[in-house]
Image (cartoon, rainbow, N blue to C red; front, top):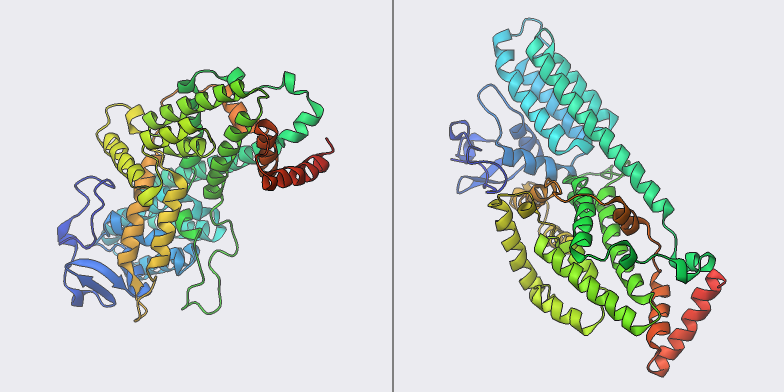
Length: 461
Protein backbone atom coordinates (compact mmCIF):
# COMPACT_ATOMS: atom_id res chain seq x y z
CA UNK A 1 0.00 0.00 0.00
CA UNK A 2 1.34 3.49 -0.74
CA UNK A 3 2.41 5.46 2.31
CA UNK A 4 1.53 8.90 0.95
CA UNK A 5 -1.32 10.49 -0.98
CA UNK A 6 -0.32 10.81 -4.65
CA UNK A 7 0.19 14.11 -6.46
CA UNK A 8 -1.01 13.29 -10.01
CA UNK A 9 0.92 16.03 -11.81
CA UNK A 10 4.03 15.61 -9.74
CA UNK A 11 5.77 12.54 -11.01
CA UNK A 12 5.02 9.73 -13.40
CA UNK A 13 2.88 6.73 -12.65
CA UNK A 14 5.90 4.75 -11.41
CA UNK A 15 6.38 6.74 -8.22
CA UNK A 16 5.67 3.92 -5.83
CA UNK A 17 7.42 0.65 -5.30
CA UNK A 18 4.70 -0.87 -3.16
CA UNK A 19 6.92 -3.66 -1.87
CA UNK A 20 9.03 -1.13 0.04
CA UNK A 21 6.25 0.28 2.19
CA UNK A 22 4.72 -1.26 5.26
CA UNK A 23 1.12 -0.24 5.81
CA UNK A 24 0.51 -1.16 9.43
CA UNK A 25 0.80 1.58 12.01
CA UNK A 26 2.56 -0.65 14.55
CA UNK A 27 5.41 -1.27 12.10
CA UNK A 28 6.52 2.35 12.44
CA UNK A 29 7.13 3.57 15.94
CA UNK A 30 6.23 7.25 16.20
CA UNK A 31 4.27 7.32 12.91
CA UNK A 32 0.49 7.28 12.59
CA UNK A 33 -1.41 6.03 9.54
CA UNK A 34 -5.04 6.38 8.55
CA UNK A 35 -6.35 4.24 5.70
CA UNK A 36 -2.74 3.37 4.84
CA UNK A 37 -1.74 7.03 4.44
CA UNK A 38 0.82 8.62 6.75
CA UNK A 39 -1.00 11.46 8.53
CA UNK A 40 1.23 12.39 11.47
CA UNK A 41 4.34 11.47 13.36
CA UNK A 42 6.96 12.69 15.78
CA UNK A 43 9.66 14.84 14.21
CA UNK A 44 12.36 12.28 14.96
CA UNK A 45 10.33 9.44 13.45
CA UNK A 46 9.63 11.47 10.31
CA UNK A 47 13.33 12.26 9.94
CA UNK A 48 14.18 8.57 10.24
CA UNK A 49 11.46 7.84 7.67
CA UNK A 50 13.32 10.12 5.25
CA UNK A 51 16.56 8.14 5.42
CA UNK A 52 16.96 5.24 2.96
CA UNK A 53 18.20 1.81 3.91
CA UNK A 54 19.30 -1.18 1.83
CA UNK A 55 15.68 -2.39 1.65
CA UNK A 56 13.84 0.95 1.66
CA UNK A 57 13.70 4.24 -0.21
CA UNK A 58 11.12 6.93 0.66
CA UNK A 59 8.76 7.85 -2.17
CA UNK A 60 9.37 11.21 -3.79
CA UNK A 61 6.09 12.67 -2.60
CA UNK A 62 7.19 12.18 1.00
CA UNK A 63 10.69 13.52 0.33
CA UNK A 64 9.33 16.73 -1.18
CA UNK A 65 6.65 17.21 1.46
CA UNK A 66 8.95 16.65 4.41
CA UNK A 67 11.84 18.72 3.07
CA UNK A 68 9.35 21.52 2.38
CA UNK A 69 7.58 21.48 5.75
CA UNK A 70 10.32 20.35 8.13
CA UNK A 71 11.85 23.84 8.16
CA UNK A 72 8.92 24.94 10.31
CA UNK A 73 10.38 22.77 13.07
CA UNK A 74 14.10 22.44 12.39
CA UNK A 75 16.73 24.36 10.44
CA UNK A 76 17.69 22.68 7.13
CA UNK A 77 21.32 22.44 8.25
CA UNK A 78 20.23 20.66 11.43
CA UNK A 79 18.07 18.28 9.40
CA UNK A 80 20.98 17.59 7.06
CA UNK A 81 23.23 16.88 10.03
CA UNK A 82 20.71 14.39 11.47
CA UNK A 83 20.25 12.70 8.10
CA UNK A 84 24.01 12.34 7.71
CA UNK A 85 24.40 10.84 11.19
CA UNK A 86 21.59 8.37 10.58
CA UNK A 87 23.11 7.31 7.25
CA UNK A 88 26.55 6.87 8.77
CA UNK A 89 25.38 5.07 11.92
CA UNK A 90 22.81 2.78 10.29
CA UNK A 91 25.11 1.68 7.51
CA UNK A 92 28.29 1.72 9.66
CA UNK A 93 30.06 3.89 7.11
CA UNK A 94 32.75 4.82 9.65
CA UNK A 95 33.73 1.17 10.08
CA UNK A 96 36.80 0.39 7.94
CA UNK A 97 35.66 -3.22 7.85
CA UNK A 98 32.16 -2.33 6.63
CA UNK A 99 30.77 -4.75 4.09
CA UNK A 100 31.66 -3.16 0.73
CA UNK A 101 28.79 -4.97 -0.96
CA UNK A 102 26.40 -3.43 1.57
CA UNK A 103 27.87 0.03 0.98
CA UNK A 104 27.47 -0.42 -2.77
CA UNK A 105 23.79 -1.21 -2.22
CA UNK A 106 23.05 1.79 0.03
CA UNK A 107 25.29 4.40 -1.65
CA UNK A 108 23.09 4.92 -4.75
CA UNK A 109 20.02 5.45 -2.54
CA UNK A 110 21.70 8.00 -0.29
CA UNK A 111 23.11 9.79 -3.34
CA UNK A 112 19.62 9.82 -4.88
CA UNK A 113 18.17 11.43 -1.74
CA UNK A 114 20.92 14.06 -1.71
CA UNK A 115 20.42 14.68 -5.42
CA UNK A 116 16.69 15.26 -4.95
CA UNK A 117 17.44 17.64 -2.08
CA UNK A 118 20.04 19.66 -4.01
CA UNK A 119 17.92 19.82 -7.17
CA UNK A 120 14.60 20.74 -5.54
CA UNK A 121 15.83 22.90 -2.64
CA UNK A 122 19.20 24.20 -3.87
CA UNK A 123 18.94 27.45 -1.89
CA UNK A 124 19.28 25.47 1.36
CA UNK A 125 22.89 24.92 0.35
CA UNK A 126 23.80 28.59 0.45
CA UNK A 127 24.37 27.82 4.11
CA UNK A 128 27.99 26.74 4.60
CA UNK A 129 26.89 24.28 7.30
CA UNK A 130 24.75 22.47 4.73
CA UNK A 131 27.65 22.25 2.29
CA UNK A 132 29.95 20.96 5.03
CA UNK A 133 27.61 18.07 5.91
CA UNK A 134 27.00 17.32 2.23
CA UNK A 135 30.72 17.11 1.48
CA UNK A 136 31.43 14.90 4.50
CA UNK A 137 28.73 12.37 3.65
CA UNK A 138 29.44 12.22 -0.07
CA UNK A 139 33.15 11.78 0.67
CA UNK A 140 32.37 8.67 2.72
CA UNK A 141 30.17 7.26 -0.05
CA UNK A 142 32.55 7.91 -2.92
CA UNK A 143 35.86 6.87 -1.34
CA UNK A 144 37.42 4.16 -3.43
CA UNK A 145 34.63 3.94 -5.99
CA UNK A 146 35.07 5.84 -9.25
CA UNK A 147 31.41 5.49 -10.27
CA UNK A 148 30.09 7.17 -7.12
CA UNK A 149 32.85 9.77 -7.22
CA UNK A 150 31.67 10.86 -10.67
CA UNK A 151 28.02 10.94 -9.51
CA UNK A 152 28.97 13.12 -6.53
CA UNK A 153 31.00 15.43 -8.77
CA UNK A 154 28.11 15.84 -11.18
CA UNK A 155 25.64 16.56 -8.35
CA UNK A 156 27.99 19.12 -6.80
CA UNK A 157 28.68 20.90 -10.09
CA UNK A 158 24.96 21.14 -10.86
CA UNK A 159 24.31 22.62 -7.42
CA UNK A 160 27.11 25.17 -7.73
CA UNK A 161 25.83 26.25 -11.16
CA UNK A 162 22.35 26.84 -9.72
CA UNK A 163 23.69 28.87 -6.81
CA UNK A 164 25.93 30.90 -9.11
CA UNK A 165 23.01 31.64 -11.42
CA UNK A 166 20.93 32.74 -8.43
CA UNK A 167 23.64 35.13 -7.27
CA UNK A 168 23.90 36.61 -10.76
CA UNK A 169 20.12 37.05 -10.91
CA UNK A 170 20.07 38.82 -7.53
CA UNK A 171 22.86 41.15 -8.66
CA UNK A 172 21.02 41.96 -11.90
CA UNK A 173 17.81 42.60 -9.96
CA UNK A 174 19.58 44.95 -7.57
CA UNK A 175 21.07 46.81 -10.53
CA UNK A 176 17.65 47.19 -12.19
CA UNK A 177 16.04 48.40 -8.97
CA UNK A 178 18.77 50.95 -8.36
CA UNK A 179 18.27 52.42 -11.83
CA UNK A 180 14.52 53.03 -11.41
CA UNK A 181 13.60 56.62 -10.60
CA UNK A 182 10.41 58.39 -9.65
CA UNK A 183 8.45 59.78 -12.61
CA UNK A 184 8.12 63.26 -11.08
CA UNK A 185 11.88 63.45 -10.64
CA UNK A 186 12.25 62.73 -14.36
CA UNK A 187 9.65 65.33 -15.27
CA UNK A 188 11.65 67.89 -13.35
CA UNK A 189 14.72 67.44 -15.57
CA UNK A 190 13.21 66.18 -18.83
CA UNK A 191 10.34 67.91 -20.64
CA UNK A 192 7.32 65.71 -21.16
CA UNK A 193 7.34 66.26 -24.91
CA UNK A 194 10.56 64.25 -25.34
CA UNK A 195 9.76 61.50 -22.87
CA UNK A 196 9.03 58.02 -24.13
CA UNK A 197 5.77 56.23 -23.40
CA UNK A 198 4.68 52.65 -23.87
CA UNK A 199 3.07 53.22 -27.27
CA UNK A 200 6.29 54.66 -28.70
CA UNK A 201 8.16 51.56 -27.44
CA UNK A 202 5.61 48.92 -28.45
CA UNK A 203 2.28 49.48 -30.18
CA UNK A 204 1.41 45.78 -30.62
CA UNK A 205 -0.55 44.30 -27.67
CA UNK A 206 0.47 40.71 -28.48
CA UNK A 207 4.17 41.59 -28.49
CA UNK A 208 3.89 43.43 -25.18
CA UNK A 209 2.02 40.50 -23.63
CA UNK A 210 4.83 38.19 -24.79
CA UNK A 211 7.49 40.38 -23.20
CA UNK A 212 5.51 40.57 -19.96
CA UNK A 213 5.41 36.78 -20.01
CA UNK A 214 9.21 36.71 -20.34
CA UNK A 215 9.58 38.74 -17.15
CA UNK A 216 6.95 36.71 -15.31
CA UNK A 217 8.49 33.33 -16.14
CA UNK A 218 12.02 34.47 -15.39
CA UNK A 219 11.09 35.77 -11.96
CA UNK A 220 8.94 32.74 -11.21
CA UNK A 221 11.82 30.43 -12.06
CA UNK A 222 13.96 31.79 -9.22
CA UNK A 223 11.38 31.32 -6.46
CA UNK A 224 12.34 28.33 -4.34
CA UNK A 225 9.51 26.12 -3.05
CA UNK A 226 10.70 26.65 0.50
CA UNK A 227 9.97 30.39 0.23
CA UNK A 228 6.23 29.69 0.45
CA UNK A 229 6.82 28.14 3.87
CA UNK A 230 9.50 30.53 5.07
CA UNK A 231 7.35 33.56 4.25
CA UNK A 232 4.97 32.52 7.04
CA UNK A 233 7.39 30.81 9.40
CA UNK A 234 6.81 31.32 13.10
CA UNK A 235 8.56 30.13 16.23
CA UNK A 236 7.89 26.45 16.85
CA UNK A 237 6.18 26.14 20.26
CA UNK A 238 8.37 23.13 21.08
CA UNK A 239 11.54 25.06 20.21
CA UNK A 240 12.51 26.87 23.41
CA UNK A 241 15.67 28.70 22.47
CA UNK A 242 15.84 29.38 18.72
CA UNK A 243 13.98 31.24 16.02
CA UNK A 244 13.84 29.58 12.62
CA UNK A 245 15.57 31.45 9.81
CA UNK A 246 16.71 34.43 11.84
CA UNK A 247 20.11 34.26 10.16
CA UNK A 248 19.37 34.42 6.42
CA UNK A 249 16.96 35.68 3.80
CA UNK A 250 13.64 33.92 4.01
CA UNK A 251 11.72 34.69 0.86
CA UNK A 252 13.62 37.31 -1.13
CA UNK A 253 12.74 35.96 -4.59
CA UNK A 254 9.08 35.64 -3.68
CA UNK A 255 9.11 39.22 -2.41
CA UNK A 256 10.84 40.39 -5.60
CA UNK A 257 8.06 38.81 -7.64
CA UNK A 258 5.37 40.55 -5.60
CA UNK A 259 7.26 43.82 -6.12
CA UNK A 260 7.20 43.19 -9.88
CA UNK A 261 3.39 42.90 -9.80
CA UNK A 262 3.22 46.21 -7.93
CA UNK A 263 5.59 47.85 -10.38
CA UNK A 264 3.57 46.69 -13.38
CA UNK A 265 0.39 48.03 -11.78
CA UNK A 266 2.01 51.42 -11.18
CA UNK A 267 3.50 51.46 -14.67
CA UNK A 268 0.07 50.90 -16.26
CA UNK A 269 -1.49 53.60 -14.08
CA UNK A 270 1.36 56.00 -14.89
CA UNK A 271 0.99 55.43 -18.63
CA UNK A 272 -2.75 56.11 -18.40
CA UNK A 273 -2.32 59.30 -16.39
CA UNK A 274 0.52 60.81 -18.42
CA UNK A 275 -1.33 61.96 -21.60
CA UNK A 276 -2.75 65.48 -21.34
CA UNK A 277 -5.67 64.93 -23.71
CA UNK A 278 -8.57 62.70 -22.79
CA UNK A 279 -8.65 60.95 -26.17
CA UNK A 280 -5.00 60.01 -25.79
CA UNK A 281 -5.69 58.57 -22.34
CA UNK A 282 -8.58 56.56 -23.80
CA UNK A 283 -6.24 55.21 -26.46
CA UNK A 284 -3.77 54.05 -23.80
CA UNK A 285 -6.56 52.35 -21.84
CA UNK A 286 -7.79 50.55 -24.95
CA UNK A 287 -4.25 49.43 -25.67
CA UNK A 288 -3.83 47.93 -22.21
CA UNK A 289 -7.21 46.22 -22.46
CA UNK A 290 -5.92 44.52 -25.60
CA UNK A 291 -2.67 43.61 -23.82
CA UNK A 292 -4.67 42.12 -20.93
CA UNK A 293 -6.72 40.06 -23.37
CA UNK A 294 -3.54 38.68 -24.96
CA UNK A 295 -2.14 37.87 -21.51
CA UNK A 296 -5.29 35.89 -20.77
CA UNK A 297 -4.96 33.95 -24.03
CA UNK A 298 -1.32 33.14 -23.23
CA UNK A 299 -2.17 31.99 -19.69
CA UNK A 300 -0.40 34.92 -18.01
CA UNK A 301 -2.96 35.67 -15.30
CA UNK A 302 -0.56 37.64 -13.11
CA UNK A 303 0.15 40.35 -15.69
CA UNK A 304 -3.53 40.34 -16.63
CA UNK A 305 -4.57 41.14 -13.06
CA UNK A 306 -1.86 43.79 -12.65
CA UNK A 307 -3.12 45.54 -15.78
CA UNK A 308 -6.86 45.43 -15.15
CA UNK A 309 -6.43 46.52 -11.53
CA UNK A 310 -5.22 49.86 -12.87
CA UNK A 311 -7.53 50.38 -15.85
CA UNK A 312 -10.31 52.47 -14.36
CA UNK A 313 -12.48 52.87 -17.46
CA UNK A 314 -15.85 51.16 -17.94
CA UNK A 315 -14.60 48.98 -20.81
CA UNK A 316 -12.20 47.33 -18.40
CA UNK A 317 -15.06 46.28 -16.16
CA UNK A 318 -16.49 44.49 -19.16
CA UNK A 319 -13.08 42.94 -19.78
CA UNK A 320 -12.94 41.82 -16.17
CA UNK A 321 -16.17 39.89 -16.59
CA UNK A 322 -15.35 38.62 -20.07
CA UNK A 323 -11.99 37.28 -19.04
CA UNK A 324 -13.33 35.71 -15.86
CA UNK A 325 -11.30 37.76 -13.39
CA UNK A 326 -14.32 38.76 -11.29
CA UNK A 327 -13.20 38.66 -7.62
CA UNK A 328 -16.62 37.63 -6.34
CA UNK A 329 -17.16 34.16 -4.83
CA UNK A 330 -13.47 33.95 -3.95
CA UNK A 331 -12.43 34.40 -7.60
CA UNK A 332 -14.51 31.43 -8.68
CA UNK A 333 -14.39 32.35 -12.38
CA UNK A 334 -10.63 32.90 -12.28
CA UNK A 335 -10.09 29.57 -10.56
CA UNK A 336 -12.16 27.90 -13.27
CA UNK A 337 -10.05 29.58 -15.96
CA UNK A 338 -6.87 28.55 -14.12
CA UNK A 339 -7.99 24.92 -14.06
CA UNK A 340 -8.64 25.12 -17.78
CA UNK A 341 -5.17 26.56 -18.42
CA UNK A 342 -3.63 23.89 -16.20
CA UNK A 343 -5.40 21.14 -18.12
CA UNK A 344 -4.23 22.68 -21.39
CA UNK A 345 -0.69 22.68 -20.04
CA UNK A 346 -0.85 19.01 -19.08
CA UNK A 347 -1.95 17.96 -22.58
CA UNK A 348 0.14 20.59 -24.41
CA UNK A 349 1.82 19.83 -27.71
CA UNK A 350 3.83 23.08 -27.77
CA UNK A 351 5.74 25.13 -25.20
CA UNK A 352 3.33 28.02 -25.67
CA UNK A 353 0.39 25.86 -24.52
CA UNK A 354 2.30 24.91 -21.37
CA UNK A 355 2.33 28.45 -19.96
CA UNK A 356 0.41 28.88 -16.70
CA UNK A 357 1.25 31.98 -14.68
CA UNK A 358 -1.14 32.21 -11.73
CA UNK A 359 -2.45 35.37 -10.10
CA UNK A 360 0.33 35.26 -7.54
CA UNK A 361 -1.22 37.31 -4.75
CA UNK A 362 -4.17 34.92 -4.66
CA UNK A 363 -1.86 31.90 -4.59
CA UNK A 364 -0.03 33.42 -1.61
CA UNK A 365 -3.36 34.15 0.06
CA UNK A 366 -4.49 30.54 -0.39
CA UNK A 367 -1.27 29.21 1.12
CA UNK A 368 -1.45 31.71 3.95
CA UNK A 369 -4.97 30.67 4.94
CA UNK A 370 -4.04 26.99 4.67
CA UNK A 371 -1.13 27.67 7.01
CA UNK A 372 -3.23 29.70 9.45
CA UNK A 373 -6.27 27.42 9.33
CA UNK A 374 -4.53 24.20 10.38
CA UNK A 375 -2.16 23.54 13.26
CA UNK A 376 1.41 22.49 12.49
CA UNK A 377 1.38 20.11 15.41
CA UNK A 378 -1.33 17.95 16.90
CA UNK A 379 -2.13 17.98 20.66
CA UNK A 380 0.17 14.98 21.18
CA UNK A 381 3.10 16.90 19.67
CA UNK A 382 3.07 15.02 16.38
CA UNK A 383 3.69 16.90 13.14
CA UNK A 384 0.37 17.34 11.31
CA UNK A 385 1.35 15.75 8.02
CA UNK A 386 -2.19 15.93 6.61
CA UNK A 387 -1.82 19.70 6.48
CA UNK A 388 1.54 19.48 4.78
CA UNK A 389 0.32 17.05 2.09
CA UNK A 390 -2.09 19.77 0.98
CA UNK A 391 0.55 22.49 1.22
CA UNK A 392 3.00 20.41 -0.81
CA UNK A 393 0.34 19.70 -3.42
CA UNK A 394 -0.21 23.45 -3.99
CA UNK A 395 3.51 24.24 -4.07
CA UNK A 396 4.30 21.33 -6.40
CA UNK A 397 1.73 22.57 -8.89
CA UNK A 398 3.52 25.93 -8.83
CA UNK A 399 6.85 24.11 -9.33
CA UNK A 400 5.47 22.60 -12.53
CA UNK A 401 4.38 26.01 -13.84
CA UNK A 402 7.67 27.76 -13.08
CA UNK A 403 9.76 25.26 -15.06
CA UNK A 404 8.21 26.27 -18.41
CA UNK A 405 10.62 27.93 -20.82
CA UNK A 406 9.28 31.09 -22.46
CA UNK A 407 8.79 30.33 -26.17
CA UNK A 408 8.67 33.94 -27.36
CA UNK A 409 11.55 35.97 -28.79
CA UNK A 410 13.01 38.53 -26.41
CA UNK A 411 12.85 42.22 -27.28
CA UNK A 412 15.50 43.93 -25.16
CA UNK A 413 14.18 47.43 -25.78
CA UNK A 414 10.67 46.56 -24.58
CA UNK A 415 11.97 44.55 -21.62
CA UNK A 416 14.24 47.40 -20.58
CA UNK A 417 11.33 49.84 -20.66
CA UNK A 418 9.02 47.55 -18.67
CA UNK A 419 11.68 47.01 -16.00
CA UNK A 420 13.16 50.50 -15.66
CA UNK A 421 10.74 53.16 -16.98
CA UNK A 422 10.04 55.70 -14.22
CA UNK A 423 6.64 55.39 -12.57
CA UNK A 424 4.57 57.64 -10.34
CA UNK A 425 4.35 56.99 -6.63
CA UNK A 426 0.89 56.31 -5.20
CA UNK A 427 0.41 59.95 -4.12
CA UNK A 428 1.66 61.21 -7.48
CA UNK A 429 -0.81 58.94 -9.26
CA UNK A 430 -3.71 60.38 -7.28
CA UNK A 431 -2.49 63.87 -8.11
CA UNK A 432 -2.06 63.06 -11.80
CA UNK A 433 -5.58 61.62 -11.99
CA UNK A 434 -7.02 64.79 -10.42
CA UNK A 435 -4.97 66.94 -12.82
CA UNK A 436 -6.35 64.93 -15.74
CA UNK A 437 -10.02 64.72 -14.80
CA UNK A 438 -10.41 67.36 -12.09
CA UNK A 439 -11.89 66.83 -8.62
CA UNK A 440 -15.68 66.40 -8.58
CA UNK A 441 -16.59 67.43 -5.00
CA UNK A 442 -15.26 69.37 -2.03
CA UNK A 443 -13.66 66.31 -0.48
CA UNK A 444 -11.74 65.57 -3.69
CA UNK A 445 -10.77 69.25 -4.00
CA UNK A 446 -9.29 69.19 -0.50
CA UNK A 447 -7.48 65.96 -1.31
CA UNK A 448 -6.17 67.49 -4.54
CA UNK A 449 -4.83 70.60 -2.78
CA UNK A 450 -3.20 68.48 -0.10
CA UNK A 451 -1.54 66.27 -2.68
CA UNK A 452 -0.23 69.25 -4.66
CA UNK A 453 1.40 70.67 -1.55
CA UNK A 454 2.87 67.33 -0.53
CA UNK A 455 3.94 65.83 -3.86
CA UNK A 456 4.99 68.92 -5.77
CA UNK A 457 6.58 70.51 -2.74
CA UNK A 458 8.51 67.31 -2.09
CA UNK A 459 9.97 67.32 -5.62
CA UNK A 460 10.33 71.13 -5.81
CA UNK A 461 8.46 71.26 -9.15
